[in-house]
Length: 167
Ligand SMILES: [Zn+2]
Image (cartoon, rainbow, N blue to C red; front, side, top):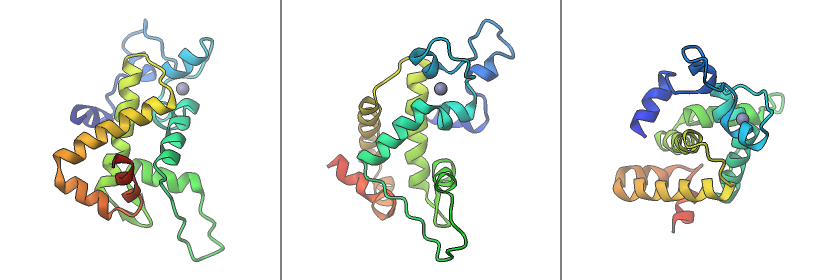
């Protein structure tokens, strides 16, 4: 996972739309979209693969619902109607919610992207509950190995319910 995060941050992951620049034999279309719908024209770009791909969005929605992650919009100014998509993006990419950045939130979504990456490289289109199960298993291992991280999750208002799902 460390290697994945390094490559992700430095934008050197083997994503279709990037690899095509030095290997023309590569299919630059999204691995997941292609499995679901072979004639797809959708290019596998970073943002597509990890955020806007309809399949990945479905996994995210499923995970958030199952883990009862409640994203609150705390804005007292009715003039400033926050865009839910933008609020989610802040959480998803930077672990920032209500102006607070939390390392455990960063880890949480980094783990999600890592799992997406693993399925992509194996060219597997999992069912949403499979993504959820792999995610929980890995999170369980991480938290049971590291008390500090577990503590951070307990204090994280956005994610503290997730611990209950782990039992
Ligand atoms: Zn896709």
